[in-house]
Every structure is written in structure tokens, then in C-alpha cells.
Amino acid sequence: MTVTTAIDTTPAGTGRRPRGRGRYTIGEVAAYTGLSAHTLRWYERIGLMPHVDRSHTGQRRYTDRDLDWLDLVGKLRLTGMPVADMVRYAELVREGEHTVAERERLLSAHREDVRRRMAELRSTLDVLDHKIDRYARARRANEERYAAPGVTSPDS
Image 1 (cartoon, one colour):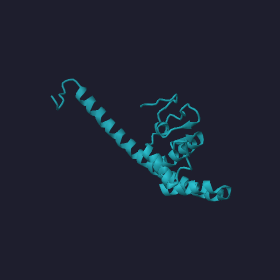
Image 2 (tube, rainbow, N blue to C red):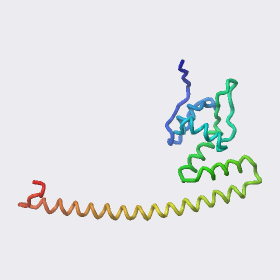
Image 3 (cartoon, rainbow, N blue to C red):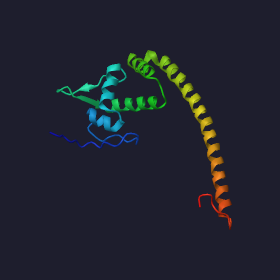
Image 4 (cartoon, one colour):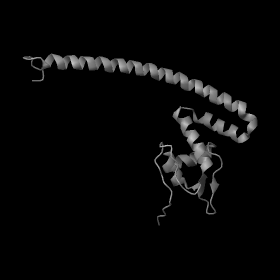
């Protein structure tokens, strides 16, 4: 039997939340985040997801707060944060306010790593831009040379 819900399963990455009841099934959360149900269950097992509520039948029921957390985890993944660091951050959050300084240190160190990698990518992008410009100039020069009257293209 197939059960449908009135939730809008907007594709991941759009920044729009699914519209629903404030309680979401694992399938609905998977559709919203782009993560598989297997990955969501794994996040729970390794301690990356806080406790996820269950229905009276044992089915996972995610909340808007869980979606907020998964949005953050998605951003941390996008920046290349190691899973072990994400799990450590989750543990610190669960431990409470006395871990604020350690959370700040962990995120600050990661931010510096992200900035370093962004600088490397900018440098690499500069090299690519240079090469592309060089090939575009060479292509235009070839087109102009063979466009002159009486000049035959080597492909002819």
C-alpha cells in the first residue's frame, strides 16, 4: 500500500523547507536533504544526529529542529569538515553551554582550513582562466587566418 502525504518535497539545495506538519518521515527528510535514508540512519548511529523521535509504531519522526541540524551538517560537509569533527561538534552541542568555547575553537580551526583551500582553488582557477584565454586567442587567430580570401583551411 502506498501512502502519500501533503508535504512538498522540494529538491535539496533550494533552501526551501518541505511544508508539512512539523513532523517528517525519513523519506520526506531524504527528499528534502538529498541524503539517502541509509545515510540518515548512519548519522544517528555514529552520533551525528541528535535523538530522533519515533512514532508509536517505531517510525522515525524528524522535526523542524532536526532539519535545521541537517542543514548545518550539510554545510559542514560541503566545506569538507571530517565526519569525526562533525561528530565531536555534535557531542559538544549535546553537552551544553559549558562547551561553547571548545565549539568556537573547533569551528574557527575549520574556518581557517576552508579559507586556505579557497585560496588554493582561486589560484587554480587563475591558471585555468589563463589557459582558456590563451586557447580562445589561438582559436580566434586561426579563424581569422582561414577567413582571409584565398586561404584554404587545412580541413578542406
